[in-house]
Length: 73
Image: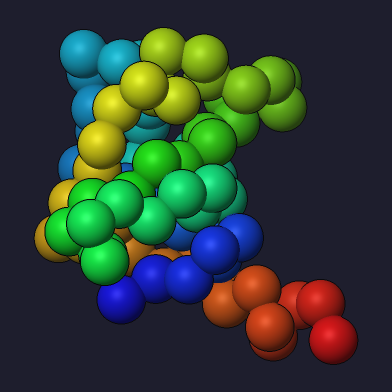
């Protein structure tokens, strides 16, 4: 399970919403106790991918890059 503000990336590209698996994002909402997540992904230029903000990603679609508590004391 991911926590709020954990940094994640996709396991596979999300072509429908323009998110590549190389893009990183932060978990900004945990839905239904971890059944899905809202992630703010950044594109190659560091801009928020607005379309992905309205997408619910399952845990199996995401991989952990770093935990929030490991970065921010």
